[in-house]
Length: 149
Image (cartoon, rainbow, N blue to C red; front, side, top):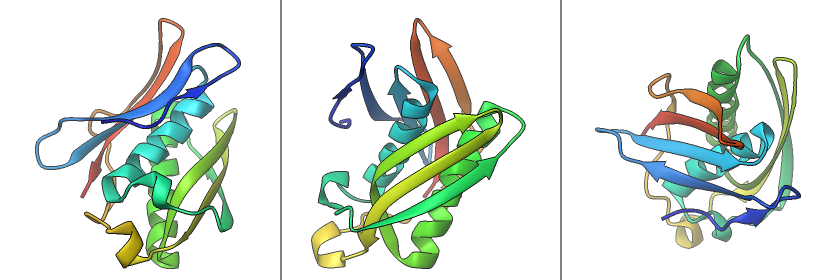
């Protein structure tokens, strides 16, 4: 199972996927740019909770994060999204990320949780440092970690 691919200017399809991990769930974002891999990792996290295509882009929130390296920045990004989902009682189904020297400027579009339409499966508690990795492999960026559910 994975997300609908998005064709980029580079001719590569950005997408997300889940990977097996003991009691928690691994999320992996894949894309032709590091920013797209971060966006896809966020989409993979949403897909643990509900089908992202059911989330309407009714409200946009901004998220700014800083970290000393790409891996910690990914964890900070995902944990910031978890915080926003929890405090705002929202789900997000669309993301835009800009990366600049240890800083992330992100936007997330979504709506308040509608249990009858979204059928939330689980609650994501946060991104962990388990299997945390951001790397360029053969021209493709991978951004992955394990989230606590």
